[in-house]
Amino acid sequence: MSWGREGPKMELSRLGAAVHLLSTLILGCTWDGLHVEKRQSTNGKVESTNDEVSRIRVTRQIPVTSSSFRAVMADSLSPPSGSAQDEAEIPLDAINLFPRKIGPRIFHLPGRGAILKVGRSVRMAEAEAMRFVSSRSSIPVPEVYEAYEKNGIGYIYMCKVEGLQLGETWSSLSYDKKAYIADQLRGYVTELRDMRGDSYGALWNQPSADIFFSHLCLKTHDNKQYGPFKSRAEYNQGLVEALTNSRPRGQLGESENSIIAKISALTEDAKVFSHGDLHLDNILVDGNCKIMAIVDWGSAGFSIPGREYLEANLRARQPEWIKLLDDVFPEDAKAEYHILKELDRALVLYSGF
Image (cartoon, rainbow, N blue to C red; front, side, top):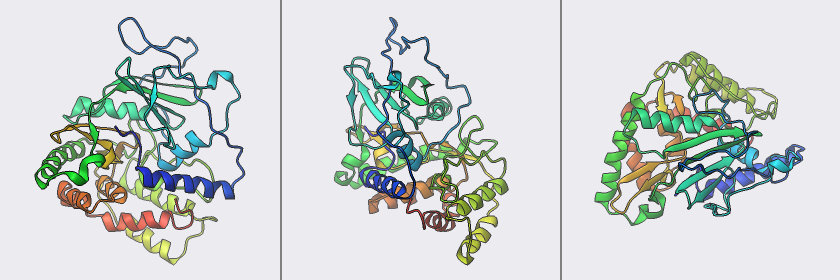
């Protein structure tokens, strides 16, 4: 299974970006420790054995800073708190599914048939998204058992979905099986786009996790958050702010002003729900290519109609997968693609990330 964000190539680029940042900033960094209470109640549900755990139910509003860059920095380069309670106490039967992965750690708990996703970048909005999608669509997602935060670390316990990452088998699939996958995805994308919100951002009126707002802020070097936005005009202004913050001194030139003019002309105000990281490794299938689950909802939220198609394409590496995406998404999802892609390239021009 995959609970990562962009796959091995993107993981390496993350590491390179982190090293680049360390060369420009002074950070006291070490691998942070994590503390996980052993939990198992008599009824089989996941429970806490520590009264000091601050359990945050998924109906509460938790600030979201979910992004590739922030996940790397939060989970891989955060300084330790110095408290022994923050040291890892992962259950003895836990299996680290991706020991080389940078970012949140994913453990299989075989005795419980569960998955534990844990890290400083893990936010309750991800659990919110899975429950939201499960309750309002036929899209298969992992069942969330419990989600909470403790000492700045997020924990999500969810069911283990049986299936293979689509990326593991994609190249060997026949045309008919790929067409079958496309048919399923087309339906799920339609269901997502039919879910509408009142603002742009993560669930429960939280900041946006769109890729445009997830790049390195060179102007202030802080963990800048953007949104939520009530209108497309506000969203567009957020894009302008992100572009300004992507420049070392916040200075915009002729090329940036040209992009701003194009962005300002976009007026489509639909607020559609999106996964935000729809790539091969976040889709689990069985032996017959039936989609068993779409995982990793850490970047989900209400966004502009073109966000899902853009981010899926930016992470796509297989030519046939890119072609499938063109077939899966409707034309209105592609209308702003070239402008948004130009913006995203401009956002990483100086930072490389």
